[in-house]
Amino acid sequence: MAIDFPPGFELGVATSAWQIEGDVAGRGRCNWDDFSERPGAVVDGATGEPACDHVHRLEEDLDLLMWMGVDAYRFSISWPRAMDGDRLRPEGIDFYDRLIDGLLARGIRPVATLFHWDLPSELEAAGGWPNRDTALRFADYAAAMGERYADRVDRWATLNEPWCSAFLGYCSGYFAPGRKEPGASLAAAYHLILGHGLAIERLRSAGARNLGIVLNVIPVISETESMDDATRHVDAVQNRIFLDLLAGRGVPADLRQSASSVTDWSFVREDDNAVLSAPIDWIGENYYSVMRVAEPDLDNTAAIGQDTAAFPACPPLRFAPRPPFTDMGWEILPEGIELALREITDHLPGVPIWICENGAAVEEVTDADGIHDAVRIEYIDDHLRALTRAVERGFDVRGYYAWSLMDNLEWASGWTKKFGMIRVDPETGTRTPKDSARWYRDVLAARP
Ligand code: IFM
Image (cartoon, rainbow, N blue to C red):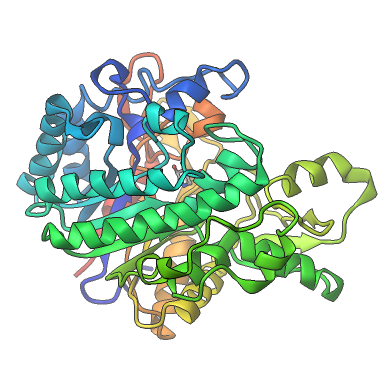
């Protein structure tokens, strides 16, 4: 049965720069270049070169987007490709000019994210996001992008999933830059939102429209009442620190207290509040799964240590996802999307929401007839239906971008996990639409 989208609902696909662009020599280095070259940091040793070689295959990829029939394409600008210190980098600017103009020429709305985790190496070396100055440099970069592209970019996101940058980057060390310093990760979270707020002001002054930020709010579910405190703590680190700052409520009081053993919070300045909560025109949510918090399991201590490492001062707990799972081990729960929408709306009433990523790494079967990824189709179909039900119940969701247009570098998992609707051969770069790409194309075409 066809999905009944609300009038004007925007459908698209998403990617990010480091995951697809390649052409490392054509830009400055970033934290992920440095991190991925460290033995063992990325499971299969993949680096940003060649990724999907998107820089050299731009026209082909733009044609695939048009073939798919998307309304909008969400991409990210690589800061070290666009900028060389505080100057524009001409080749990089030319690349994004061609990308944006190529989208417009094909009738596709450009949706740009300014920071999808690739921080210029020199800023990382200077302390990265735990350092307040990075937020100021980010605002300068945002202003430069606004001045260049405000006339053509339809929608802007400052950051993508700041939780990953802050806590996977500086606390568990699972992502670049690989630091394991809980106190620094809280400072990073704060400065990311500060940078976002400063960037919003600068983008607006440059005439850019439709300004927002993309979070990955993950509904945190307590499996038993005894785990309610742990659940609240996880929710504070995963979701509330970002939502509360954006809502003008400051750092959540319970987190301020519970994390006092790892930071004195001296990086928080009371007069930052107006910047942290700068008015936004929309908010993005990347929804994949939920987190279930259960009693610690003595047979599972290794897993406990690994998971809780990302959460300073976390009470003992165990994450207990329920089947079915994707290849990432993430529980599949389409109706969980409504829990995420509720938490966002409770914090930011009246701000329209876009689902900026949703998709799955799954088993695929390749035969003479093509690449069959039935589980991905089912996953996206179920989530789109859950989303339209949520809209019927009153949530103000205006669009959905599937993750991802094509297979790409899945960060620390390298090429071992595939989210694409189009296969990219890691050896040759050849693009082949999977069944899901044809299915999504039909969904898009079936709209009245
Ligand atoms: O590939 C990532 C993306 O870069 C950010 N959101 C989650 C995706 C899947 O892990």
